[in-house]
Image (tube, rainbow, N blue to C red):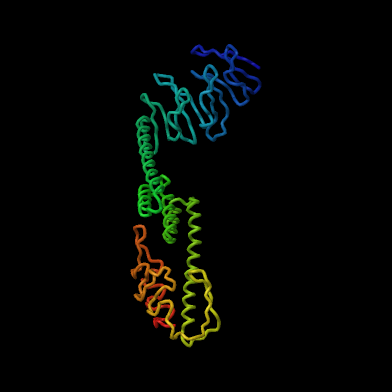
Length: 374
């Protein structure tokens, strides 16, 4: 290994070490300052630091530099930057490091602490402070940084405020559905573009609320809106899949109820004949089987309407939803619209027609056809 003593203009002395293609540096008292390594193409001293230079694999940058203090301490984390350069030290300008990353410039102080992140078109020291250039022009770093910090503080404060609203809505019991709905709507209004990440969960949770109330249509809409706000929101995807399955099941149940009503009607029609037997599942889960032969009239009183001839429930279950002769839907009272969580929605029982879904608006008992007898 070859050692060559170097004496610099500022009086600093050190040994340059070479061994074939290996380079390093050592103090006059034998302390390692830069490890002897094949990595370096050469080492040199630029006040106040020693530096080891090696070829860069970054296009447009020939050498990268690692800086060491006169007692062998490495200054910068070179893995953070594509290139660094020690500047300053003249005419009252302090020493500082110019940094570069992906074609953007920044700055570090003499101890390697980052002052300006490397995200600007230009960064330089002028008139006692750093100046940066972005797409709007040149700015004093101190003023630019203060504005950025103030904007960030405002953003943080708003995020905290929206989180408080969300937590308040989330912790509201489902039994207070209207209050819970109103609070989630406040969250959505405060974060209309999901910028803070609360709009999508708020919409999803509204869907859960609607679903718990049996309103599958609005639940589905809320889950879809949540996915519009955040297409990668897995919980909303799962909930949407579940509510779609429930809606399909409900449609089949409705078809079953309609077929059951048709079967009952066919079974009571006078002098009618059919080729076979109809069967389906009723609301109570039991199977209906009826022959089309037989008479629709008789001397006994109709058990469904108790002789009134009006649309009525057989067992009294959900009797308030039968029209009792008015022909109007018992769910919406004939308006075709119901009020749910502060919104007007189409009545799902009559599909907005306003007619009783049990007698189809006739007002007559589905068993006796209005005669009161069976």
